[in-house]
Image (cartoon, rainbow, N blue to C red; front, side, top):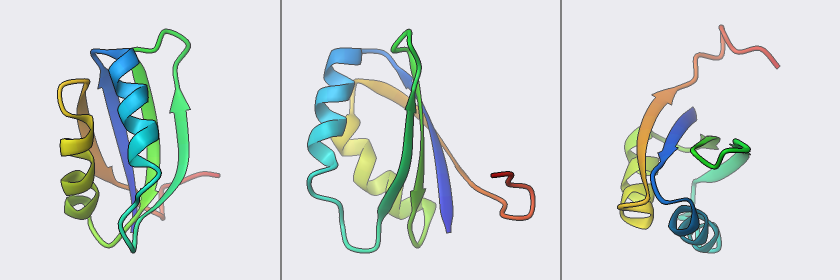
Amino acid sequence: MFIAIQHEITDPEEFWQKANGALTHLPAGMRLHSTLGSQSDSLCQCMWEAESIDMVREFLEPELANSCVNTYFQIDPDKAIG
């Protein structure tokens, strides 16, 4: 399944440092397809492929703790464009 995440970044320096570190050791069965950061460094959206939202959440929350607030949702392939 595809999962989108909106990261509301509260500490840009810490967020990007932790995010870059996390990407070097992804769990089996998870793949990051895209990362779209805003110019203001206050928002970032990512699209992942994994078995479940919980799998992504359980990996990212400890990695990004205290640097952002995350909203997760499953992508509906019938409504996706592009």
